[in-house]
Length: 414
Image (cartoon, rainbow, N blue to C red):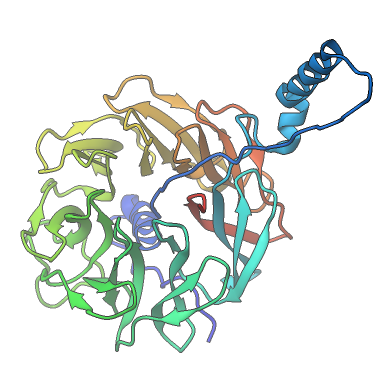
C-alpha cells in the first residue's frame, strides 16, 4: 500500500484561520531534533626526499604546503568554506504526482554536509524520520503493512525492524537523549495519545490521559521531561461530545518522562505549536497566534515568563535554538517558494532575514551552519548556509516534481 501524509482535517468554520491551522497541524505531525557535529579534517603529508637538498629548501616546501592547505580554492574543493564536515545529513526524497500529491517511492538518502557522498540507503514507503543521538540508527513511521507503524533501521540501510504492532496508526518517533527510548504518538487519522517504548520496541506504555489529540513529543535535553502539544476546545476546556473532527486550539503541555505531572503551560487559547527546548533545558521556544498575529515566543520551563519575540500576520513556525542557546532561527510563511528563514536573538533583539526562500531551519551542532529546504529552483531541495545567511549552497539537485524533506543532521561517527 502506498503511504501518503495523513489526510488534512476538515476545515474550521472561520475562513481566516483555515490554511493556517492546516499548515500548523500538518507540520506538527511531521516535525526532527538536532545533534552533535564534528569537522572532518583533511590530513595529508607530502614527503619528498631529495638528495643534496638542504634545510632551507625543505622549509620552503613546508611553507608551500601550508599555503596550499589554507588556499580558499582548495578549501572549497575539500568541503564548505568553514572546513570539510565530518557529520552527515539524512533526508527523505519522494516524487510528487501530477494529481494527488506524494507518490512512491519514498527514498532515504545520506550525504556529507557539503553535499558530497550522496547515497541511497533504502527505497521504501516513509512518513517521518528521526536520527538516534549516536547517529547509528533511524526511526521512522511508514505504511509498509497497510497501516502506519514505527520502524528502526541502521544508518547504513541494514537491519530494518518493526517496533509497533497496534490497531491504530503510529506517528512522530522521537529518541530520548540517551538513545534508550522512543516516544511516539498513536491514533487513527491523527495523533491521539503519546506513548513511549524501549529502543527495541519492548515496554510500550501510554503516557497521556487527556481525551484526544496529543502529539509532537519533544524530550528535555536531560531526558527527564517531555513537552507536547494537546488540542483543547476554546470554551469547554476539553473536547466535549460529540467529538469534533479536529479540536480548535492546540496548547503546549509538559509531563515527566513516565507520564506523571502533566500540565498545560500556555493556557492562552491561541494556536500554540512547535515547542522546542533550549539547549540548557531552562526555556521553551514555540509559536502562537494571539490577537490576530503569529509570533515566536519564549517561556520558562514551567510556563512562566512568556515573552513574545516577533509579531507578524503570516504564519511563523519551526523555531530552532542555536547550540549555544543565544539565537533562534524560524520560518515565516510566504506560500511555498516565498517562505523565508529569519534569525533572532533569544532576548528578542536583532531580528534578521537570512533567506529569500526557505523553511525548516536546522542548525549544525557547532552552530556555524544552518541547513534548510527551499523551492527557489522549482523543487523542494536541501540547502546549507553560514549562520549569518551567507554562502548559500544547494546540496541536492533532483528530477522534476521531487520533494526533499524530513532533514536530520547526524553526528560524526567515531
